[in-house]
Amino acid sequence: MAAEIFCPECGTKVAVGEVFCPNCGHKLTPIAVKTNDNKNDDSATVTNQDAQTTMQRSTPIPPKKPVNKQLVGGVIAIIVVLVGGCLGLKDYYQPQKQLDRMITAMGDSDKNMAKYIKTNDPTLQNKISNKSVKPMQRYFESNRQQLADLKSTLQDGSTYDGTYSIEQSGNAWLFFPRYKINVAAAYVTLSTNHAGVVFYQDGKKLTTTSSSSYSKKVGPLFPGKYKFKAVGKIAGRKLVNTSTNKLASGSQDLSLKLRIATFTVSGRKGATVYLNNKKAGILNDNGKLRFKDYPLSNDLQAYITLPVAGQNLKSKAVDVNDKLSYGYHTIAPTFKGVVAKSDAEDLLESAFSGAESGTEDSSTAELFTGQESNSSYNDLLKFFQSFKNNDNVDNYTSEVTKVNSVTPAGKNKATVSYSVKYTFDNSGDAGSSTKVQQFTYPNAEIVKQDGDYKIKTIGVTQAADWEKNYSDDE
Image (cartoon, rainbow, N blue to C red; front, side):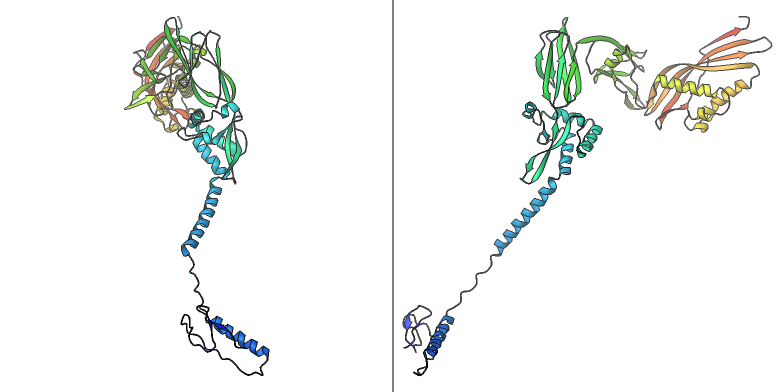
């Protein structure tokens, strides 16, 4: 039986021996066909298979499609981004780095802090906002050491001030633990001593008192720095009491009584007096300024400024209420690094009494800048030695009776005016007598050096303020 073959191009059946397909004209590959009848069926089968194989091989092989390099590159880029993003998020949400961000925001009232805060108080939890947590930020912003203590305590996993602790609060991107600072709530009860007084919190009106025993509980609040104020009219006069307070967690009381008081600020004449940062007057020729029936606020502070060597020096602020509570009605602000009157008197008295012996004394020398090389120290030794060498002087003593004034002379130095009383027991041909003299040294200089006050110069005196003589007969 003749083998059947087909055109590999169009599939049309063609006769053996055809060179071209009668249908499409495709050139056919010649096939050798054996006609030996003695060949068995296996030979015919093999020949038929060879023919089919030959025809199949003549079928064109379609070319391979090129690889889409852009697609592969895009997939690789996505994988790189995902891996990089995962590593970046893992680094960003490290517990220590989360704490660093929280502490930075806690110490900067311009930053958004609400996202880092939680509380166990359900009412306060609903009030969390960047505005409601500002008092915490204001406090730590002005108290950097406390901020550092807060950070170290939270790093140790402990609770700071019984108020602040760090806790996990869910996860970020499903996989990374998110931490927040858990803050305990604060409450404050306000009271005053008159009816019709209006309470304010940071400028916001809270309530008006209906009696002199009325009180108002405020909270829950976040701990921190708040300004409370009570405003009322007493005997036709408007009185205001302001109080800037650090509220701690838990409950506390705050009295905002409306009061008046009379007090005097003293210092160097011509100094400018400020009460709560507002200019209040100038010290007179006696170095005093009196305030009569002045409205007191809980945070009333006084300080003075003084022009010295082209600079306007500012004294340390004095808590007026604190002084009044101890019975002091004269307030004398001091300057940082400038010796106080009492300290100046003690220092000068030690120097004079130590030098009375007329011999060098290392402990006395330590009271002076430069110690033994200080010219005033050596002059003082020579001064007393002259009395010891005087045959007519049987005995002598000195006493620093008063420090008249301490005037700032620049950073960490002051000009001191003081008075010294000398007593001499004399003997001679006319008999025994006692002479008492007082001299004023107007221009001694005391400086602060390595944390201690030292005498730079003892000053120069001209003539005795007064002199008294007593004879044995008297």
